[in-house]
Amino acid sequence: MKLYKWLGNKDEAPALKSKGWFVLTNGGEAAAIHEQETLADDQTEAYEILDQKGRLEDGGFAVFNNIPVTDEGRELFESRFQNRAGLVEKEPGFAAIRILRPIHSDTYVILTMWEDESAFTNWQASQAYSHAHKKRGTSEGIDKRPNIFPRPSFVTTYSK
Image 1 (cartoon, rainbow, N blue to C red):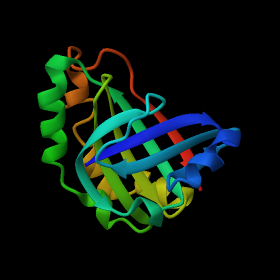
Image 2 (image 1 turned 180 degrees about the horizontal axis):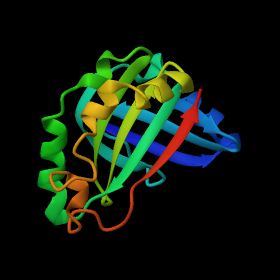
Image 3 (image 1 turned 90 degrees about the vertical axis):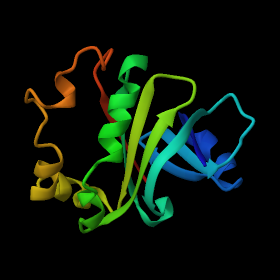
Image 4 (image 1 turned 120 degrees about the horizontal axis):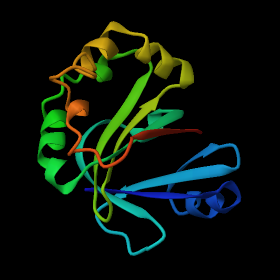
């Protein structure tokens, strides 16, 4: 299964929504996502879904953690997520997660959907979050391997 993501002006999004896309906004910007096997459209970013839990439609607040990864780092990066503890799924307000491998770029996306923004910020303050990120910044952490990440990651958020 694949996930397709469109980014653009909020005014353009209703046309996609009418075609079954899940549309989220942030100010004047919009993100639309659609899960299906194939899509013939060069205006979207395409991803293979490596792991998924929950239904995207059950959330109202989306967090896209965009992580550029070198070709040499893909195997290690994917292994990190294949062996994750899965604690996020047990958090109050959690709706869905998608681990997304880029098809035409180097930027992976970890997409989480939450009931609302406060559910996400509560997760960030939780012991489960601390456990999931306990190696970050240490010699064991994947973030300390400079050949894996060609540039910094970044987060974007959108709401229903």
